[in-house]
Length: 578
Image (tube, rainbow, N blue to C red; front, side, top):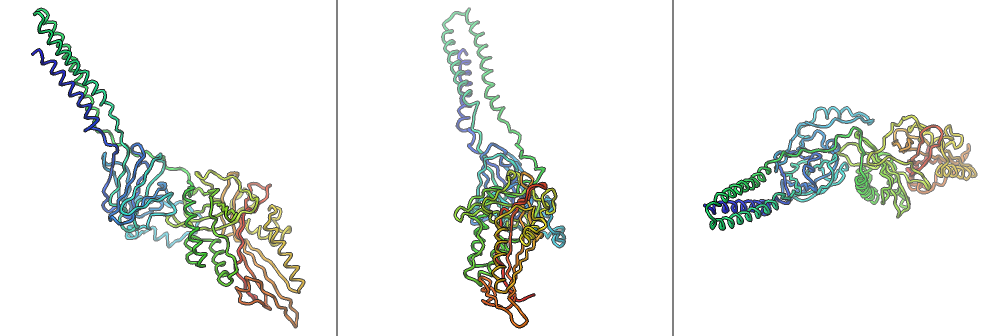
């Protein structure tokens, strides 16, 4: 029996060391951990809620698999708020966290359940649309527009059959929208993969401890071998030493048990995104506005080549659409007529985005085109969360124009009420006041409210030249300008001033020399002659143009209003009197 104790100690040491080796080999944790969910009837769109990709340490990889291997499927990144507005009342499946360690929790909502409430807006109410929204058609809720590439998204990835998105950021309010064509199921499976902690802190201590225990066992065996040669009186002391060593072995034997006891299932982590914002955020990010302008530029350029007003409507609205469609008609009649400048193709130097959570919404951008040496201020509008942004106005910044400092585009700038007070003039009065300035010059009622600018000086100079030339031949000319307060945007700069874009309609009428017996003949200039289809007339000649202008309207009553951008387009000509 003297060799039993060494054998037991050695076996315990081998077992302890084996536990350590197994933790580095057979029991070694995988490099990654994956949680997935099979979707059954998910609806046309799925949303991965904020924080789900941050349940474990990032980078995380989100993967979506379509129901058919050749079906295009997309993942789009946006904020939760924008995702909710885009989904609206449509059927949706939301990935909200973990159901089990390797399983995602998915909740399918139908019939408008969980739809966000529409925010306040200054847009005219549409009672028919409101009635329709109050009682949504279940069949309509089962479909959405194809979600890939919507303007509301910050970025989109697409793939055939499967698509993945790598994410290595804080949770924030970031959500991901998954879908196919808007009619078929959003996805058959969604999975998220994270890197796994492969550390095995007990492995080396167990291997070292096992080796030490084996050495102790060998030492005890060696001592037992020597003890056999000792006399009987010392045998009692030997047995006491064995008991002490046995107690030591029991303490070591507890190690693997303790090690294994610490490997029980952990509580499932919960998503921890940023709280919902208490104020409206920016309408578009820097990446969004660049992508939107790229698409708009392509559409407008194609429409310009074909003079296709219908194609233009995909990315144009408001004064920009009116100016350009009128210019198409003129260009169709007059080959030498030059269309208005295209959308500047260059760096977005200022993302003058609005802080808003309502629709319709407007936002602005200043784009510098170094090739044509032109900087444009573009105003874009979006009618609803699913609509594409359209270019609402385009003005070319004047040489030396100074734009006031704006708010951080990550926060956005306030959209101002057209009648907002606290400025040199309310925004909605600026176009009419400027129109009066073009008509009356220094005699205009609010002439002192405006800083002298090159455009108005040129207009008045041209008026004087035309009058002098025509009156020398007996003809008469009149000019009229009218501000349109129904087409206007106003955004607040950081210093409290308002950046206002509005419309002034311009018209000139030339009347030939006329007496009781004779009427003079007018020579019609181009492109008016091509539009009318005649080079001479004995009737009144009326020519029209649309002026879109941008002003900086300072806060307070002291500083003058400054014209910073303008775009005048010839829109047509007629002969005869109304």
